[in-house]
Length: 451
Image (cartoon, rainbow, N blue to C red; front, side):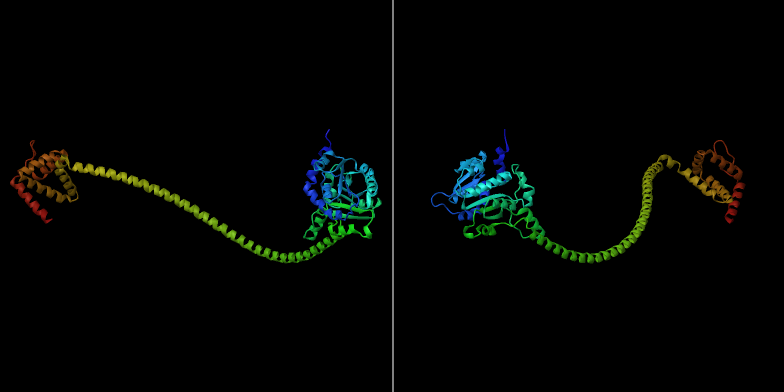
């Protein structure tokens, strides 16, 4: 059945980093390896507990040490074996118990002590103290819970971790195991940044020194404190440096207070400007309101004018329609007049019109006579009768024309009987007067001329 041990190599590759990255980080310890005394009569032995993929073993070998790795996870150790490194598949405590006293120059454990119970760790430290030479070196690297991000988050990504080990606790346990010289090296975090006090504080607590190493020797060489000197130059800042954080935050408070005073002054100035702007806006608003009223009145007047214009437009449209209708009617009447004119011209050019011309002349004469006094009319007619008696051909023509209008013929015959003594016969008029009547007519005509 699959266990987490089967997945641990993939877990390391994912969350710890590549071999190259890990080996680069481990290079920080090389100055310490250079200080390790070499054995004069044989190889100088270095043991790496929980060696994993073997990055540190390679550095030990490159430093000229006889390196042996110890691990219980065969899958993890296989990569180191494939790279030609010495690996013992054994429990770390049991392996150390099998080593003689003061036989090892370097004992190291990278990200191993957080995986074991406290009692097991205490026994392990005792065995490390026993097998190390008097000037031997102990290196124990582990996640740093002083870093808030590590202590609250990334430490718990690995389910095989037992509990975080604060630097002070691990250093205490190492000291209790009999190591005379100890030091804490904080490392593997982001360097400090140049930023504001608040950002620097957050960066220190969350990004700096994500790991630490407890360094120890059984005794200080020649009474010196070489480990402390090394840490002084290589260690990153303490993420829980509350004195520094308080100083930064205090400067931030002072800066905020100064800014607050500036802000207050700015706000006060802006408030005055805002009041002035408000007053100006109020006055402008009143002007706008008045202008709106005028505009509304103007719009109403324009609406009325527009309505009147629409009425006028409608009247003009009706007038134009009537003019168009009259124009059409005029054109029609012109056509009708032209037709009548053509008909009249055709009628006037006809034979009947020319034949009846004398009758129309008589009718016109009678109409004209109707406007003359009766005495003159009678005299004219009497004179006309005398004139006709002297012109037989004309008399014949008149008789034929008068017969076309019987009423006229009767009236003329009656007039001739009453005034001239003429007697009508069946064949026509008697136009020969007696001498007495002719003399009387002459006197009358003469009398008529005098009238």
